[in-house]
Image (cartoon, helix red, strand yellow):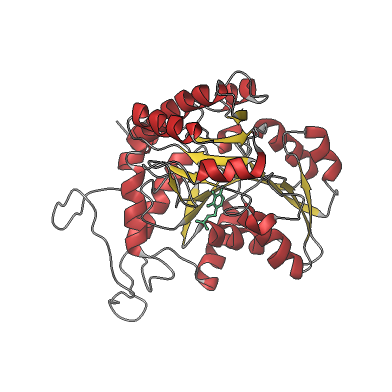
Length: 387
Ligand SMILES: *Cc1c(COP(=O)(O)O)cnc(C)c1O
């Protein structure tokens, strides 16, 4: 059995994770080193010279990331935003234009608007689930990047990756998909035609809320870009530390079974919330009532652990709900084994208030963990009773 032919869960456990040839240790060591002895000047062992340029623990994670997403190369960074920044600054120049989804991660929107905006890069924010709107927003020759997030954050809109990839190809631009919410266990954008996949590995890939990191994976045909972004990673230096890379690799090994449980729990909770009179709307692609359900069923294997609700009493009731749960802890971030509740308009999405990407005050976002679902449902019921 060759690893290249292995299925997803097998690759998640074995890609880049060969045992240590010196000791036989099943788990490759964590190479906590900044530099490497040379056998004579320039005589590098395994190509390693200095850990900003390369570190075996990071290489192991990068190999694992590429294997998970079906790409030709993975790169690992100190955070998701560091990964996004390295990619965008490699691809863009002043005067270029970016088309970006209107409910992408708030920090991504802020990066494009404030950091790249100040550098002379323009952007247009569109609903990427509306293909005509995307087509209209593309400025032929000037638009260099189409940035897609599906499911989106926090409204869980589903965008058609295959159709957007085709549109991007026709326009000669780079189609980037932020696959943080679905994770490669549920959705593989490169297989659908995306050029680059972005991750905040802080979330489902790490999976235990104990590490901040980011990753990029490049599709076949993007070898040259991968090389250039690899140079930016080395030259600008926002690399992941060896220990962070180790924690992320360790988390990835259980990604498949975690995502199954996240999805199952989230679906049960979405159904419960959908029936409750205090909830105006449930945004979860696994529900038949979700406008993107059929598309999600095509491009995802399950629907993931993220859902949002619109609370009937508006902002005040939404805040009260977010502050009332006990098992669902009030915190930013998502994708860990423990359940979290977030109030986007004042927490994760505070940076986009007053912009086109603003989130309504009635919205509460849940990151459903892998606890016993009956305990999670009881927690939700108790919080709803206080509305
Ligand atoms: C968290 C997140 C990011 C940013 O990643 P960091 O690791 O926090 O820098 C990007 N995209 C999505 C969808 C996220 O959830």
